[in-house]
Image 1 (cartoon, rainbow, N blue to C red):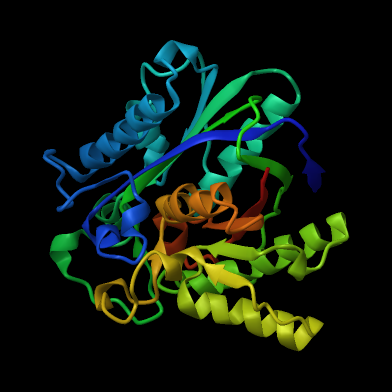
Image 2: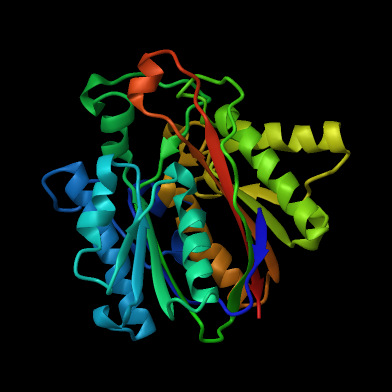
Length: 329
């Protein structure tokens, strides 16, 4: 399902990240960075909440808005009961909607927020999402003290938070259209190979977006997915080449862009987590659009919709992908 927007603009963005992201190739685009994963807090969960608070504080300062000026905050993360979002956004805005799209949360938030603005229900909204490497590892895989080895196909949950302020006020970047994805399940069951799990949902949503809009891939200066990592990215490229005869020469993946895979060996196949797409989109891509170095960008964020409970019961892992089309004004 694809629909267009005619009055939704990005007013401002903010990003804050951890030490691994700080050492990556996009570090100069981030608003704030930390040198360690503790961030002065007593737990990984409290550290992630701090990231959300930082992102909100910065976007309010950069935009000139006050907390009470914000009609709505839309937030989501990976933790149970979207803990980082509910604790981190408390006191900001006149309403809150909590969402869960796993690693697709950034585009899901923009999609929901843009729809409400375009329908004239609200005038502005902040969409925020976060993830923390150690709070996610603790919840979804093993306690870090266990020291479990990870295969080369595994992705590395990014540490950071990103916030995006949408409004009716005309700015340098607008949200042009969006495609809602559907749940796709190809029977993959390895939580250490998220690229293979999520690649089918990218293929489905990108195909649907192009069909609905009547566009081809070259309409966009950049098509960026997140967060497949380098192996999932190759699956998508191979599919479009062999099945559709389409060369995705303008295609990158946020999970590959966020880290230097040659130097940062610990990250294995690349970045993951809701913060992955948010950090890349709200920093580098937003800057490129504002500076008119890019004019049209399609962002497709993916999410693996699983829980440890279902993995332990030997169930497959479904995935989803939502797309947002951004254009320079």
